[in-house]
Image 1 (cartoon, helix red, strand yellow):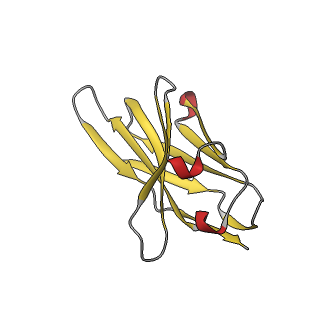
Image 2 (cartoon, rainbow, N blue to C red):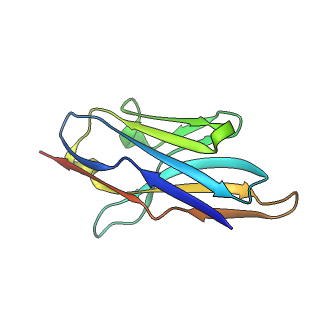
Amino acid sequence: QVQLVESGGGLVQAGGSLRVSCAASGTIASIVSMGWYRQAPGKQRELVASITAGGNTNYADSVKGRFTISRIMAKNTVYLHLDSLKPEDTGRYYCDAGLYTDCQHWDDYWGQGTQVTVSS
């Protein structure tokens, strides 16, 4: 079993900052990539940022220059630093991890999400 636990969301004013974190635990052989998605009410879940085991990062255009993803591989933990927040960044932020539980079995896992609300 693998669990992803997110933390760090909250309410912040526009222009403010937050950091959300996600820790993966359980039967993990190796993590291929971790990322953050968000879903606003009435909208589809969208990729915000991702990072591979090799450190390659990918960002949605809407967050480039404002959000930064980082990870501590030894702790199976990924962080998302959210700066210059806008009301349209409001949503539930979900952690995702693609990983091997042994040398053969790869799967994709999701956390339960953490709410980020940006007031104008």
